[in-house]
Structure formats: C-alpha cells, structure tokens
Image 1: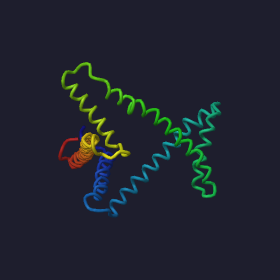
Image 2 (image 1 turned 90 degrees about the vertical axis):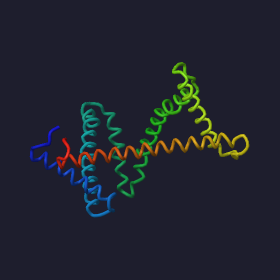
Image 3 (image 1 turned 90 degrees about the horizontal axis):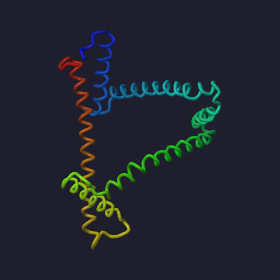
Image 4 (image 1 turned 180 degrees about the horizontal axis):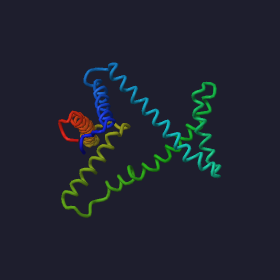
Length: 211
C-alpha cells in the first residue's frame, strides 16, 4: 500500500502515531499526564462508539420488530431498562433481577458450550488409542495420558503425597510446570508480536519502510 497523500489521511496517520507514543510513554517511563490524556481519549471514544452501537442495536433488534407487531420484544426492552436502576440508590434492588437473569443465562450457555469441547472431547481423545500415525502417535498418546493422570493425582489434596503417590505427583508437578512455562512463553511471544506491529507502524509513518 502506498503512503497516503490526501490531507486527512496523512493527519489521521500522524495522529495515530502521536497517540501511540503517548500510550507507550507509560511502559517506557512512568505514568504521566501525556499517557493519561491518551488513555482518557481512548476510553471516551470507546464509550461513545459503544453507546451509539448499542443504541442502534436496540432500535434494530428490539424496537423495530416491536413496532412491526412483535410485542414480545417489550420483555427484553423492559429488562434492559431495569438494569439502569442501579444508578438510583433507592431503586438499585430492581437491577438485580435482570442482572441475575443475564448471569444465569450466560452461565448456562457457557457450561453447554464448555463441557463437550473442553471436557468430553478431551477425555475421549486421551483414552482413545491412535489407530495410525506410527510410533510418534503412540509416544504423543502416552505422553498426554501420563501427564493427565499424574497432574490430576497432584491435586489429590485429601491424601499426603508420600509412598505410592510420591513419584506420580512429582511427575504431575513437572508436567504442570512445563504447561505453565509454555503458556507464559506464548504470552510473551504474543506481546512481542504486538510490539513488532507497533514498531512497523512507527517506521512506516516516518517513511523508513514502505507501507
């Protein structure tokens, strides 16, 4: 992509560059008025965008069908209005009912979408021996099976980890440490990837590398 030539495009590009430097002044130096200004601008713009987007969604999903004859849509509309009673101290208790309904529905849908892929499929994959793939498939199967069993035994807190439980629980602890190390490594790489993208944008704005 070529470097923009239109005035507003160039202004937008340099504005983003300056705001990026303002945000990165916090990790590079410390919290300062420049960082707080950029932070408040970001929060304000995100709040404005969310207000406009949510209002448009309410009109499109709820009010328009209700005006067309779908009067059942008045139920979620009333529940949504009830949530705003938390801003009024004497009527704050009213907001507990729609919040409880949202939490319960979200929890139920979350459990429904979690059990099959994260628990059921994981158990089936662990106890099902590979039918093909050669020796490496069996090595992976045994590695996962031993790691799962030993890691679960490590959390048997009702028994002291001595005697027959000493060796498998120590192995389970090693597997847990390896998993946490890999997770931390992935997090660090993800952060560096984000930093690489910002560094590329920094150089592109200064025309040191092509867009």
